[in-house]
Image 1 (cartoon, one colour):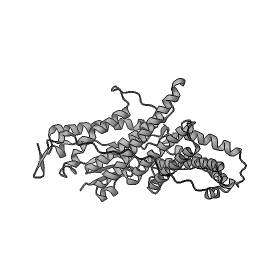
Image 2: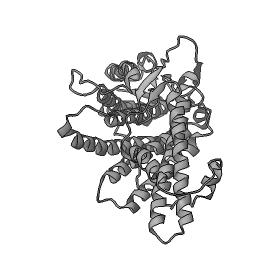
Image 3: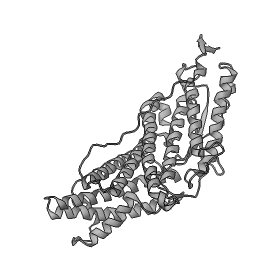
Length: 415
């Protein structure tokens, strides 16, 4: 059975917390960083020297790169490295190189599964670092880091860039489309982690996982990725003259459902420090913002139809109230440490900020400004649509061929 060791946070500890993370389009929780691990002592007698050295080299590479990347995940665009790619891409590749070799520790019997004490620095949990002697904990930590890196990549793609004017429109559209693919891939990692990896851990270890890796946080991150993917789709529909009002409303209503489900998974978790509190506030903000745009588009469709003017007016007034609430939620998110700021509005957020105040000022709707909650209570129900975006299907890679020569005799591995 894998054992657990958790280290409370102490002054001057290994966890580094930035005070400001700059502009945020996609919330990216701080990177969990692996602590150094000596493979030779617990595995040296059972595995070939070359395999032990390979495991050690691959993980050490991740330790170094993750430690360097952690303070930079939300900074403006990466510069190219000497290898040609971004540091995010290099770290992602390092994790993908490590995973097939790591899988040999969980797929070749239990004689190695609990031999190593894997330790990672947490970000969303009060406990600074968590150590477990179960290789599935390491697999879970790797998949989580791979997903968080993709969210960071999406954030960087969607931040404003200084393109030349003639190139800007095309480049932004390419970035939006690429970000949707990234969101679905990140959701695939997280969904697989919840469905296939968490069940591999004994219940007592699952209960002792840091909040970063808890089922609720993993599911909320997965739904966040899907919700932000739909948000990009909605922004593209808003910019398209071909997209009908009905299509825009459907996307907005789907967005509400994704964010509602994400909030349900995370709202009761004790995420009270730094990144954890900010994570909760981000989901709350995006949920409220999604309601504002969904009610606005719903109200416009009701106005065009045979619905009574009062029902359409109630939907539009609810949109205005949710817009006000979303601005307050946005401010709460950004002032919470590590502090952040909004980039210039674009896409669905820009549409929301511009159209609702303009349209509402031209309509004669007599509501008592003091009856904020009543306005939301009498608003008509939003249409319920089947969610269209699903996580990419993900499967663990095949175990590295270097394990093929390993044979087990009487429970002891031999070459």
